[in-house]
Image 1 (spheres, rainbow, N blue to C red):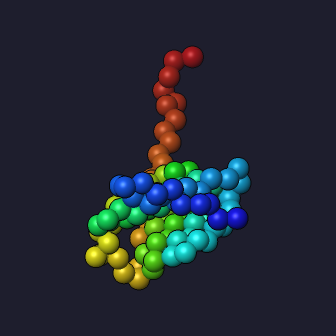
Image 2: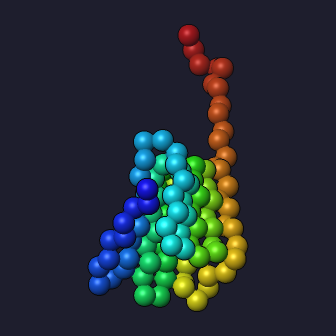
Length: 100
């Protein structure tokens, strides 16, 4: 079941929250993941993945990320595209010179 929109004078907000990854579709919005939202303002949209990995789409603009991320896009810049956020590099070092 798709979440209802919360409308204020400032924006229309859609919030997606689940204990396990799920897919949601409502109007021109789709979300796949555990937690995220879409905030539609008068002149911009905020695509939000609050718990990664996830994917969120407004109209034909998709944000995909393995980690939490927020992307603010002017409404007049929306286009058919996928914005990929890469996973951060992880470096693990083992200090073998530590005294016993």
